[in-house]
Image 1 (cartoon, one colour):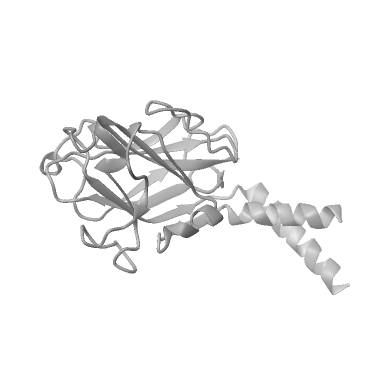
Image 2 (cartoon, helix red, strand yellow; image 1 turned 45 degrees about the horizontal axis):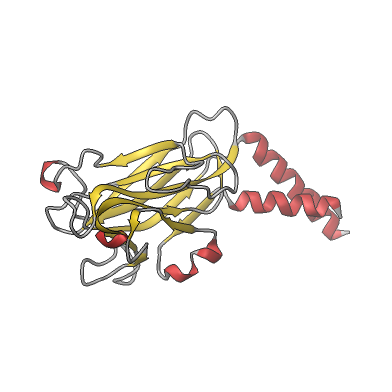
Length: 227
């Protein structure tokens, strides 16, 4: 029985080596291991939402098959800090996270951070607009100086970004987070408008030893089943 449980545990771990999320229906994200937290100051009227195809259509799939965030994440003039956290995954040096994003066509600057936590299943993003919790590793910061799109800021057409996992002392597990982070944002702010996120894909590079263990236990399970 213990061997069966061990095999099941490792099989579950193996499934964390890759995922793709297309945001066809964001009401299913929780069941898929995703979480959200709007920590803007002050908190606005909305968090992450299903894409609005009247603003722009998705990168792939149905017209509204993407996830969006906008200036209403805060109220008045404030700091937007709206988090979208992925499922727990196996983190190995050389692994890649890719995604597509764009903003609406306007003169208001937008910004997005990609952060990583190596704290296993933790979804701790801290408290308030400046809190980051366990997500201390910044892998990418799109438009940190709030440039206009014309001057090299946030793209206003669907654009793919890829980040690599590196610097880990050993394989571990953790999560990634997309943080819509805009200072002086909101309906009355100088920055923030509307961004979309689509086709998020993660692919880990399994360590050879891990693959051998998984393969060996799978073979053992097959032999036991034949008996």
